[in-house]
Length: 232
Image 1 (tube, rainbow, N blue to C red):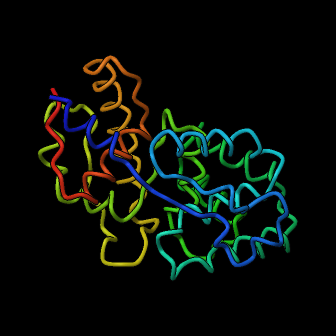
Image 2: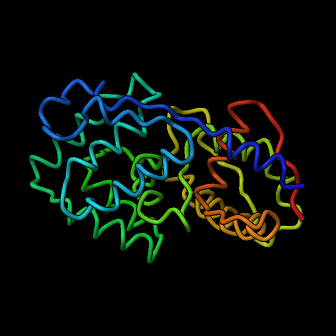
C-alpha cells in the first residue's frame, strides 16, 4: 500500500543553482556555483542541515534559502532583494530570525508567523516564504507549503482524510499568486496531517518519515500527476 508514497518520495526533484541570484557576488562564500542543489531528497536534506548549522550566525544562509524557495518562480526573484534590503536596513541579525522561527515551532500562531515575516521585510501576508524557514528548522514536525501542495490538498482532501484523525482543510487562496494569512488554519491542518501520515508511513515502510518527507511526496505526486494510495 505505501508503494506509491515511496515512489513519490524517491522521485522528488527540485534542482536549484544558487549562483543564478543576480547579487550573488555581494556575498562571498555564499551563492557559489558549487552550491548547486541537485534536487533529490538526499541533496535537499543536506541543504536543510547546512542551513541549520549556520542559521543562528550567518544571515546569508537565510538569503540562500529564500532564493532556493522561489527559484522556480523566476518572476519573484526580486523577493530576495526585498529580504536582503530589509534585513540590512533594519539590522536584523541571523540570531533574531532564528529566535523568531524557534518561537514559531514552539507555538505556531498567526502572531509568531507575522513576526518572522516582519523581520524578513515582507509587507504582504504571504505564508510560503516565511514558513519555509520553519520547515528547514524542524523538518521532522513541519512541512513546507506552496501553491502546488495547496492544490493537491484541494483536489484530494476528502479521500485522504480517510482513516486520519488529523483532517486536511481546503485552502482558499489558490486563485492568487501566493497563499495568504487567510489560509493559516488550513496550513495548521496540513501540518498535523503530515505528522500523522509520517507516523503511519514510518510504521508501514520501516523507514523514517518526517513531516517534510510527506510534503515532498505530495509535491512530487502533484507535479507528476500521479496518485498516492489511501493509507490505513
